[in-house]
Length: 311
Image (tube, rainbow, N blue to C red; front, side, top):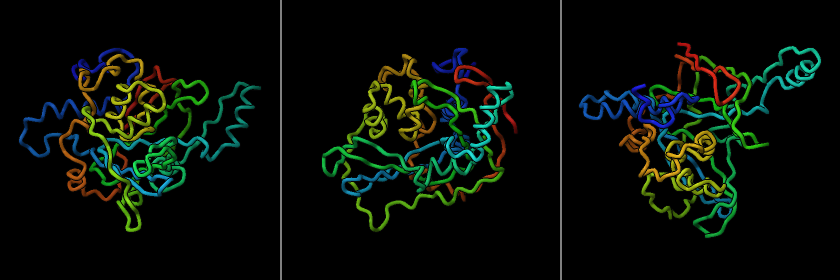
């Protein structure tokens, strides 16, 4: 109650997102420990890492690299990569006749990684109507996310909450993802600007709110309120995650005012005074991790249910 009383999403009794609450808690701890002189007083720094997004303009093939601070690795779940699609379809047909439980799609964890980060085709996002700073004309651009550093402790989020392509309402993906006990992310490490690459002109306008202008512009092009887009950009490291955030928070009136005037705190990654380069220099992780705990959501919808933790 104490940690959530000042936050519009956590002071009521509505369904809450565990990752957003985690970020909020890190922010509250950072506020309480900002007076401390101990270098390890704020545990939020142990979860922070840096992502690097590579954007390539299809008109000129020029590129732009942008670093962002994150406290969770957010992965999409590619349902079409299920290894048991035939059994799932057969189970649906059987249930309609016998009423038996359906077989859930089984998605390999590796497929979630390949759909979210790295150079795989499935992880490349296409940006339409992209205004190229090199040509001042609109066209197509592609965007890929890499990891520029590895934290001491890695929080991985499997994004079960998505927006329906049919009626644009939030829904929960009903599937199984086999998460490994050990994880090696070293192959997804960013190498930065390559020798043969030419950088796009840097014409970004500074934002008084601190929101990523690229993310804000992509969301605005979809017709969303500018202030809502700014809040989404402040709370997420990329446009895809920001879009999901918008559908989950669009009805909250707090996010319809400029971030500079809103009373709600932003996530810990944005509040931290460290720069991406500072975090990269302080992160000496190898990208190899062992599972310590897991939090799962029990419930069929985004509006209710409960979280269960296993340590």
